[in-house]
Image (cartoon, rainbow, N blue to C red):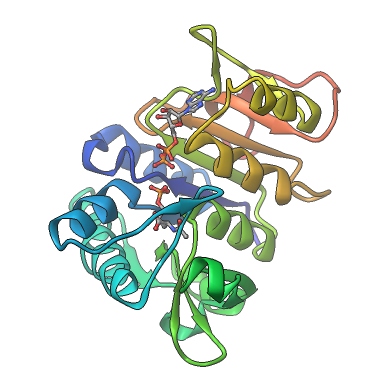
Length: 265
Ligand SMILES: Nc1ncnc2c1ncn2[C@@H]1O[C@H](COP(=O)(O)OP(=O)(O)O)[C@@H](O)[C@H]1O
Ligand SMILES: CC(=O)N[C@@H](CCC(=O)OP(=O)(O)O)C(=O)O
């Protein structure tokens, strides 16, 4: 199978995706790379929870999700955000198909710790065969980070983590977190590459904080021999012949190039 690129599109940028984001997806396809889009929607979920007066909190970067909050999460992610992205893809001439992770057992999970987090799941299985069948038909799957439990109920999953799980299960060659910043920033400048040790240091110093923390943790958790680096990049940048430019997260100190290379580009 040709190269697979998992692109996680953050909720911070979803309302401001430019034509460039969709052109980049098309460019990947034209170069024989099969994109899978996983999206977030944190800001939209927050707005709707507040509008409906449903309480929530964050523990370690995860939204505590009551049954009432889960109804809102599902409505916003699956009903609104997922449809909006897929519609924009169609308008851009891309064959996108939207799914909740609870469709076709795409994402199966166990509750993380129900007492503490409520309906928040840890993914235990990804229906890779289903995704592969879509990729073979040149369809771009667009996945909302909702997983189904063995009890048949649905659970909220951090979108960065879901993207990491999907990348791992699909033996993806690339995982790119696209967001509203050019990458990991320090003192106003872009950090071009970072290893696990360097990232821990940046977290300890408070330079990496907030929504960047689950992103770098998800990146580190899915690095392996197949997926040797993960990129954090601006969603609306142009990709060059060398790929995306941003922060490259990799396992070792070995010299890395500034760009995330796709061999097919
Ligand atoms: N060192 C850092 N470099 C860049 N962004 C950072 C850093 N630390 C925290 N952030 C914050 O992380 C945000 C991206 O995370 P988040 O808002 O969760 O994005 P998304 O919704 O795209 O997943 C940035 O907009 C920024 O406010
Ligand atoms: C468990 C948990 O925290 N789920 C996230 C899912 C959406 C998400 O991750 O969206 P971003 O990528 O925009 O942050 C949430 O409820 O916000």
